Image 1 (spheres, one colour):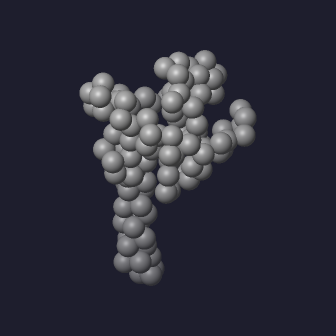
Image 2 (cartoon, one colour):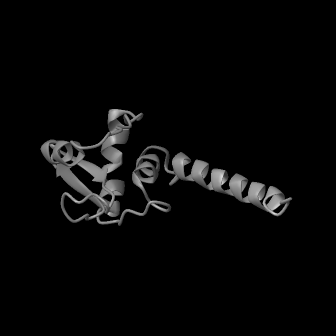
Image 3 (cartoon, helix red, strand yellow):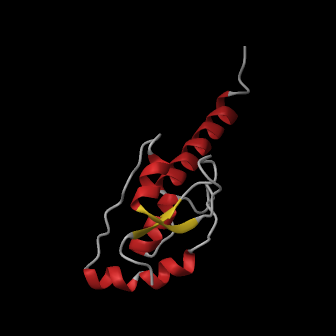
Amino acid sequence: MPSLSRFPVAFPSWRKIKPAKGVQYITLEEFLLRTRQGKIWIQKFEGTETDRGNIIPQIDALIGTAYNLVNFNCEHFANLIQKKVSISQQVAAAVAGAVIIGIGLLAFGGKRK
């Protein structure tokens, strides 16, 4: 089991600070160093202390899982741990937007004067 001074995070491979290892345990200092140049978003854990202890094996099972912008990004990871559902509202919104744009182009793109 990890020490209380290490936190699970999922880092995208496009960060050039050091090679990405997907989901991993890092120190708070490492986290702050990696995120110093960009905005960060921290999702508070909504469970009890008992729930917190029970998710450690779930996190351990995800260690090394590669980051994927569409299928397994940081939001997927946070929702999987907290809500047991791997979903990203950001990805869903982007897909919906692309579909709407595609329909608009199909409907109005061919009608040129």
